[in-house]
Image (cartoon, rainbow, N blue to C red):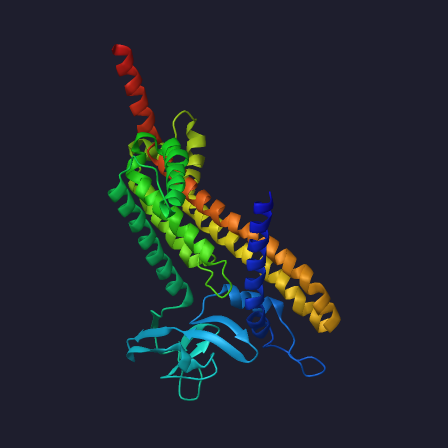
Length: 370
């Protein structure tokens, strides 16, 4: 029990330190608004929270006083009128300056005229390496390195020997996805889809965990990221369908004709509702967790505007609640990766459900004949 208590305290202390690292930058982002009676900048909690969960063309880690530790990211633009343009986002100076006929307007790059107004005649394709893109690529690299190192250990030691080191941590997760997600939902075809399900699970999990680090990108809280994952799953589901599946969609058996006319559009709509549910569920849950944590941090500055004593007095309470939600978010990171993977397996299994039942019936008939 003592050992568990020490570990819990260390995790809580580490979480609190991470909270404090992001606090100054958070206050700075929320303070760029209206001014109070004494001339001090008012803290805008809504603006600060939305800024932190949004994508950005620079990586802002933390701030110490007026010193901002940031990493400018490359801007890659192509315009049929202006051609290809590549430069660092530092040229925008946090959106305060124009560079090469472009300016940063609410985290979006727009073409401008000489007088600084938006040039509607210029069409721009933005291929910039934003914070979300860089962190997503980082997650891909980490995932490849981890999985290849685990695979090499299996090759060196053999599959029948007890796992050691990091391999010991990864193997239970792999067997869990195989035995509790793939096999129950996909039957004898589970091996065909297991690589995809494992990739989706670990990729979402890694991005969820990286997104909990203050200063990191909120990748899984970006609707474009979850939409792309849902589209890929949608394509896999469609390629897994058979005649029995489409027969139930366009001519549901066992119901009267008037009811069939009602069910056909409903069944067709359900095909698109499934990936939409995958997209919205992951996006909403991860975004909500970040907003709750940042809301508790915002209370420090909201009370601080009323009174310095109130701000300092409420700080321990706010940090305690933030750490508590932060620890819950670690659990949610695993749960959401599991839910997305499990629902994907369920939808794929439904796509060839008739074929699965047919194979089982055929197997029973064969066993009876013997």
